[in-house]
Image 1: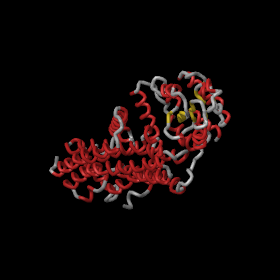
Image 2: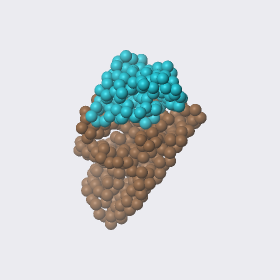
Image 3: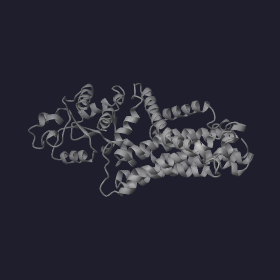
Image 4: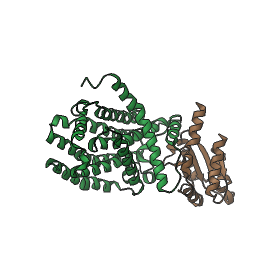
Length: 318
Length: 138
């Protein structure tokens, strides 16, 4: 564990996770709005629009509602950003091994990754509950339900590459993201198998839900509960939430590539990344919103059985 | 610092739609303003769901004894700096309801209004022009 936490790579990891990923996320936010604009046959905002939004929010007044739990209310957005920065670091270390990626991270970081990804919905829920607003409470309860919904198929999808690597090598390297990347380097991406395709579809739906994009933007539905969990947030904390979302928008497609599509090892990864992003934006633009019970049924009774099938297929080597 | 704040406000004015007892004509025109045809997202204008996120309040309708406290509350909930844009002749000067028992006068008696967009209802083009003028006045 000591070898990968040393020297210039550590510095680089800090730069990547704290500067490159948020900036790239804001650029991607523009890509999202631009593609949406083109889908609706209009021109769309200029490229600096997300930066102007964040700048404006940072310099605006921050209102803390009366009766809110002040400290928790203001600290919750930072929890999300911290979680996403750590995910960025994990992905950086797992993908940046110079010779063999297998030794670049620690055993069990796939499990750590699951918990770090849970920090974002947790920060939304805690922040919304601290704001003492009934609408935010509705949003928080929906966020909780949605999280319980998508986490089950997501874990099953994550089990597919782990099972495959564990069958070929051993459990220790299967529980490393670096091990998954190394396996794909040697034997080709998991995506090019039946179980891999199913897992990728599940992860794609989960990305949509984790990002709060349209079929699953139930916790912040603008038209019914007035942006739900964020309803009381203004100024800098709102900017922090938006940066969290932007970082997620970078990291979740990268996570899909890392886990299932060969890892971030060459320039093809950029193309794959853009493909996934445009796919996510197109799904967002061509779908109506689910109700929360429909979303839960979709994740638990359609995607989760699919995930179980994928795991079984992975066990018998397909 | 002040320049930066102004630049941010000018480049991304998020609007919140305060429909305070209007006849819905102005509201429908506002909705038309936000359709892809006029594409106000070019200027960074986004409709937000909560007054906490808003930089500009689009108020419509003749203000009356019932709606006045609500409008004032929404204005107080909005983080400053925030613009108030009165849309429609009713919001500007009460229009034909001037002598009504229930009308309590135009908005600028109670909150600072940065732009008046007359019309019954005003066209979306007029609203864009009004918002641009309000922003360039800052």
